[in-house]
Length: 268
Image (tube, rainbow, N blue to C red; front, side, top):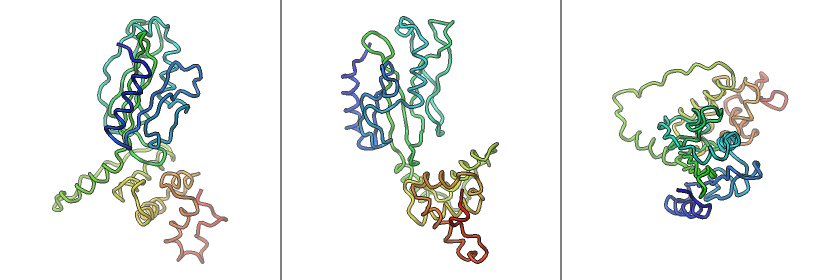
């Protein structure tokens, strides 16, 4: 069974109306003559700040590359394989694994639907995402139907409820300390630890909570990493000037020692 673009748009509108403004629906044309502009329909594009005519995601680009290496006949005959459920970990999106069922000699992998995995928006909001590869009337994989649901506020509610029902007589289980092998991974780990310290996503933090998180990063030496100031300010949705002021709250008493992160001694 194949779907026309009109049918997919009808489904997208229905899903967006059912689940509200936090549910983004994107349709990519994987056979577009212009591979830099693959988005042909968007509902609630404010979730990831995308519009019709926008470019492909990493996953869409990988799918287009895979389809380019599959003969038209094979594309129409190849069948989907169910992909295993994703663990609830943040990642860029579903991977393309395996070999073509009907063309063992081909190097390109099949396109497997991936459902219910977690992603993060550029401004730090948490999304529950699903990607489906859709065939057209000829049986050819033609479209990528993407659902991105912003669950950031739901996570905040979950944490609030957990704090109400948590047994105060026992300490919460401590998470194992991750092993990192480079400073960029270390910075990412420290940022996640600062978010865990506050107990809510950065997009929901108020000023005092952001100060607390940034003070944690400062005390942990995060700003010794090159360009860390740019990354941290973008993650918390603040300017670098504001970042300096949040750090400076604790460092003011050291001004006479030259410890203040001013223009002569930048954070990154």
